[in-house]
Image (cartoon, rainbow, N blue to C red; front, side, top):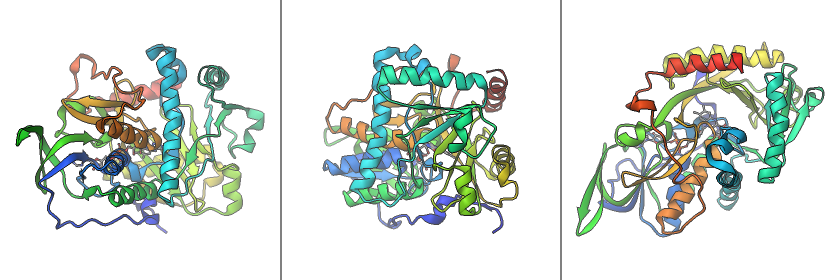
Length: 432
Ligand SMILES: Cc1cc2nc3c(=O)[nH]c(=O)nc-3n(C[C@H](O)[C@H](O)[C@H](O)COP(=O)(O)OP(=O)(O)OC[C@H]3O[C@@H](n4cnc5c(N)ncnc54)[C@H](O)[C@@H]3O)c2cc1C
């Protein structure tokens, strides 16, 4: 099969259909913006509690990062535990770590409850060290994580690494058996079905253009204007991640959209697939400009990375195929002749402090900032913020932490500094 610039996961998935001629309701209790993991998880939770929910999606269900990602359901956050403790202290970091573990349970529970056939499996993840000093740090990290967070990781010496990965370029690894893998497109489609089954209405091709405070019959709420007309809602929940735009300008200023790209090979012979990843782990390396990779359920190598820093477009996707192929062969020389069948890209959402953030801004609820660790955390935040909206007081250590904007306010939502940031990360990988 010749190379297709297309998301492989979409070839395995059927999405629920919505009626494009159906008018928007005049009113809703909650308008959710964005039909990805965050928005759909929130919509599902709110609808289950009896709220009238309208999900507005500018493209189609799961169109954003939620159908395009690596399907790695990971523990932890993007930042290492030492950095987190230095930023937030031990107690808050402990709560954040517990939440990140709970976020995986949250995905597993939804998959089981809703019988979503998305190949969810607790296959564990493997982080591999690109330098000796990265490996030395694994020992320190596992000790802290065990003592502080009561969670056990396993350090794998270089001499034992062949049991985990068919590559000899790394200095050792660290395994977390709790992490899982799934087919993200099937998962997001299942989440949408579940939200709809519980009564949420989803409107595709309904781009939110503006949101204004508006009172109606003595009640305060919001007028939401979309490309399919307008409606009024008591509350608004924003789950637009790396695609956050000018409808929510304050949030847009706090989120940097960064491109990430993925290739998949042809289906590999079983013995070769087993040699590359004998325990079928979700794998990523220790660089800032990192590679992440795994086998797909049908036995392809899926290999991703930040081949270009700018978000996906025809040019960045095309360039990424060759850059990632070279990266993949540098890890796995065994794949030098493997055909690349799919390449695609998606947009990640980075906050300036590389942390997830959730709560209320300008009177609207939101959850963003997953920095490439969103499969579990987005599902979890959608649920937790929905519980908060429903009047509960759920444990959520990410609400209320400082949410920094750009230094000196030098950012309006157009990331002019991305080439600089990309170059800077490459420099960091040389020196650290
Ligand atoms: C290539 C890639 C690989 C990744 N790999 C992993 C991984 O292996 N593991 C992991 O944990 N995370 C990974 N991530 C991150 C993860 O996919 C995201 O964090 C997660 O999907 C975010 O979900 P979301 O619902 O918040 O956002 P999205 O899924 O991006 O959804 C946001 C939606 O909002 C819609 N929208 C935006 N503006 C408007 C508007 N004005 N009106 C209406 N709708 C609007 C968009 O169309 C979009 O569909 C990866 C991301 C990418 C791009």
